[in-house]
Length: 492
Image (cartoon, rainbow, N blue to C red; front, side, top):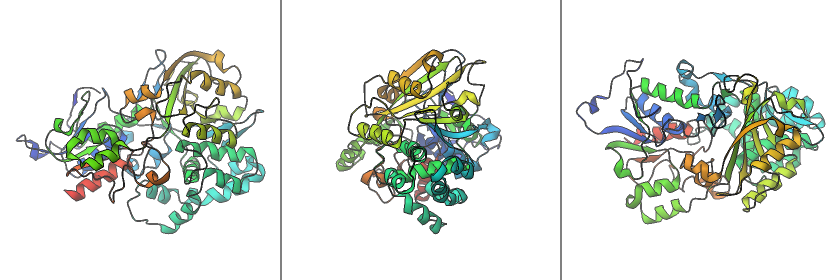
C-alpha cells in the first residue's frame, strides 16, 4: 500500500458526518502496525472517523514481508509465527479470512535440537510431548495441563491485563508458577536435558536472562499456546495479517495514509483523540514541550531490551537437520542445553556478544510453497545481541545451524543480514534493534512505558499510547491497540 487509501466498504458505511464540512476528525492513529490498526478498527467499530498515518510505504510494522534475497523468495521482515494472533480475542472476532488471511499450521509447533542427534519436540498433543520426554514427561504434563485446558480464558486475561479477571482461580493458578524464573522452574521440575532445553527455548523469547523472575511465565505461555492453538503463520507471509486488518478497517470507513513520517504532534490534523503506535522516546520527541520536563526525562531513560541480528537465507533445499523431527517443525530453537542458552542470554544482558548465540529459526516453506520457487526454501533466523550491537553475526548464526545440521552451508544460495541499526532504520520503534518494546524485567515489567495508573494515557490531553511498550507488551495480537482505544473511547 502506498499513498492515500480509502474505499467504499462492503459494510456500506460512509465517511463520518463530522468530516463533511472539513471539521476535526474523531481520531488520528500514528503507526500502521498490528496495534495501530487494532486501535483504529476498535474506534471505527464505534462509529468514529479514523485516519491512520504510516511512515513506511506499506502498512505492517512488525508484520511485513519482502523479497530480501533472490527473486521469488518471500521473507518475513520481522514477526514470523503467531500463536498470540490466533489466540487474540480481538482478531478472532474479525472477518480476516474474508480479507485474504489463511493460517498454515506446521506439523510440529517447535523443536529443539541437541548435540548427538537428539531433539526435544513440542507436539500439539501434551501426551505425545510427555511420552517423548521420558521421566520428565509427567512433570511436563502436570505443569501444562491446566493452562492448555483453560487457554481461552488464560490468554484472554493476559491479552487484556487491565480487565478484572473473569476466571481468578485460573489466573492465580497459572501465576503461581509464572512469576518464577525459567531456570528455577526447570531446576525444580526436570532432570534431563531435553525437557530443560524445551522450556529454555520458549522462555528465551523474553530476551532476558533465564534467572530473571517471570521468564517461567513466558515459557509456559508459549508452550501452552503450542499445545492449545499451535504456532501457525499466514500463507504468503506475515504481511497478510496487516493487509487483512487494513482492508477491514477500510470497510469500516477508515482512511490510511502511507509514506508520511510524523516527527511532532503539530504535524497532525486536529482530532478528538490521537493514538500513537510508537516507542517511549519517540513519544517524548513528538510531544516535546507539551510533556512535563520530568516525564520527558523518564521516557528518554526508558530501558530498551537487547537487540536482534537477523539473517534471512535462500536455500536450494531444506535444512539437513541431524534430528529428523526438526524437519517437521515450523520453528526451531537453536542453542543447545538450558545452560548454554542461559549463558548466551546473560552475556547479552551484560553487553557481550556470545560466540554461540541462541538462534530462532523459521522454516515456512516446508509448509507453504507460495514463498519460494519450486524445490527451493527460505530460512528465517535471528539471534539476540546487545542493544545497538555493530558486530556481524551472520557467520555465528550459520555455525550454530551447521552444528545441528551438517551441510547447511552448502544449501545456501543467498543471505540477507540485518543489523540492530538496520532494524531501527526499518522501524523506528525498534530502538537499537529491540523488537520487544523494552526491557521486560524488574520494575519496568510492570511500568511500561512509565509508572501510571492507566499506562495508555499520556500527560498530554487527548493523546494515548498504543505500542508494544504498553501492556501486555510484544507480540502480534493487537491487544495494546484495542485496550488503548477503549481508554480513548471512555475519555471522549
